[in-house]
Image (cartoon, rainbow, N blue to C red; front, side, top):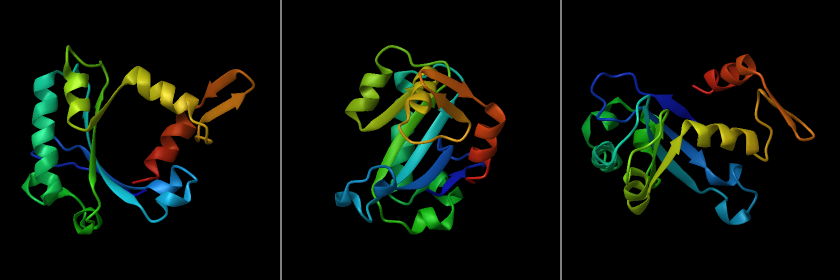
Length: 151
């Protein structure tokens, strides 16, 4: 899955973009050759419904091939006609009804606890995560080196 971190100062709330090939995520033959484009926003602070609404606007704009988020995205992302899925990652979590509003509008949300649980519970091998019986060991350097190499 190619992934690109946007580094512009006015990327309209789009922090990362990528393309996910679904048959690499599940062995089902029905997903052969199926891809989706992924757009994400990452926040260090708590995210409220207003933030999700703004991201939804930016997500829609980029998906239509408009705006700064689209302009700053790599050519391989721009050329793809795959459907777009939006993610909002919030280190300090979400406030009030933000996750519910996001879900109603097809945007996935993850807080830091959920992200860690997903990595630790992944059925596939994750670089830097070693499972021995019921014990899990996390090796930050190996994990960060692997994800740094995906750019």
